[in-house]
Length: 254
Ligand code: G
Ligand code: G
Ligand code: MN
Ligand code: NA
Image (cartoon, rainbow, N blue to C red; front, side):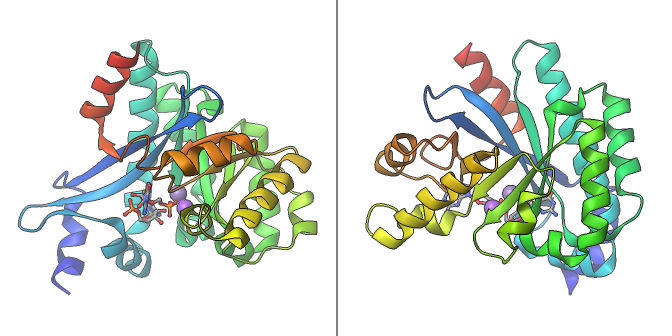
């Protein structure tokens, strides 16, 4: 309740921060992407995770200005890394269903790109299956427009929602993100391992890239690499960190 009242002023007060989590190429460990994950740096409570305020922001409509800030900031940061020669990867931004429903979304995306000078190719938008299925007609129009613009689209938490594969086949998408729940049990549950392999096969048959999330161990990473998963994301490689720490990490890797 208290959080809700403060959420409205948090944006103006500059209390939101973005943490970035690297994604690495499964064949060579080179950083090939960065997911932007918002946190609220609350003056009393410290870093509040998105699960605790994004749902409130969705209900109140505040997710629109907050989401706009995330888009701009993530594009600005990736362009800053590019200017320094530290980035040739794309930045991934999560979109909530309220943002997807907002008819101004594509304009916001264009503005964020124009303002920051980021090449659209280096921005990826993540939508969940349930967000996509919220309005399939709008989805098709949206995807056609993003494709024209050159922005990449990923399906987040893939395998946990229900989108028809026949439907996916016809959509202009770029990547599937294997949900962490399948990755978690990959080494101790044959069914989870089968699902991971099946999702990788589906992605490649549809000519999509595939990234596994929640990779926490060497065993999980090598299993996924052996089964041709393109990229890997998770604590085994890096936790999400603030921009300064990620900048240091990128410099060190040069
Ligand atoms: O970082 P963490 O694991 O706590 O993130 C939890 C959830 O919050 C994830 O499902 C993620 O998609 C979502 N999330 C993180 N950042 C953003 C954001 O900028 N916008 C939206 N809509 N969701 C986000
Ligand atoms: O958008 P999405 O729901 O995929 O958000 C990814 C979430 O997963 C973030 O909240 C991030 O902090 C979290 N996360 C990232 N890496 C790992 C990991 O290796 N293990 C677990 N359990 N969670 C992770
Ligand atoms: Mn995500
Ligand atoms: Na996810």
